[in-house]
Length: 188
Length: 142
View 1 (cartoon, helix red, strand yellow):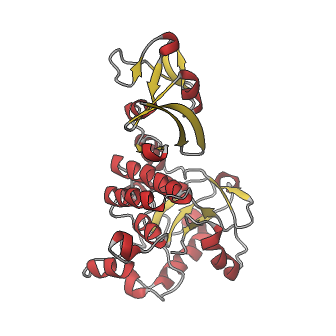
View 2 (cartoon, chains in turn purple, brown; view 1 turned 120 degrees about the vertical axis):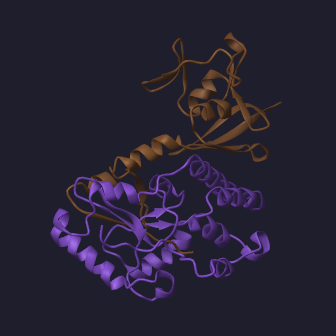
View 3 (tube, rainbow over the protein chains, first blue to last red; view 1 turned 90 degrees about the vertical axis):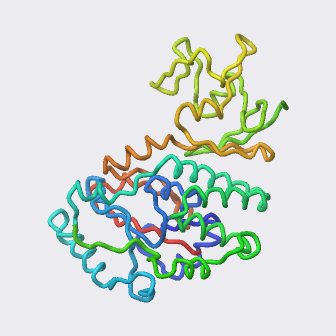
């Protein structure tokens, strides 16, 4: 599922290149991001046959090409995914309910307002008011600073340096060694 | 205060209503209010489906009586715990779901359901995958 305001115009070339056999969805309004409080990509949620969350949203890369960001050997994560696919509820990587809830990132009132503000900004951008949109994108980012989605999406829609006075590279440098992703904790 | 056509962005859709904007307040007749968030004015109060809330006597988001009755959608939404972001200059109000509802649903561990289109415009609904495991991966072009 791609989180992309510009929809197929932005995500389409990646989907065409990958030619996936699984459903490959596009969430232009960040509806799923809001419902699951997703703040970064690539991240994944494991959902069992009954529609229950068995691992909340967490960093999920397919390989180690970004290991300087992930700080984690993602081949171990892929092994965990395969183990769950085969063993289901018996997989050691299925967390108990208490641990799942501990790991959930529940939205606060500020996050909910950030999401409504982001939706307003997206709409203004799409309806020909990109400069008005910038003010609301900035407000959404200030309300939920931990959301890289709100930052990177807004920057991607315009000249980030000109309208936001920053770039992704600058923001990553500003982390000063703090992790870009919440560290992956594979076992419960 | 000016009569205005307003676009209301709701969690699952967007609607157009006519009302009077005053800063970020948006005063609507009961008929327009019904379009914007499915609120219905009944003797019990304001109702949305089975949920009814009595209108507090001193509510700042209600004014007038009878044919002059108007409800401020922004004030009502905030009273109900829903986040509101507005650009009155552009005539757009964005009203989210109450944060308690979003958080409670997630905390239940029942995966929040959704329907989204794929690249070809075909829609897929999470709950239609019951009986199979779902690996829900979020990625982005940016």
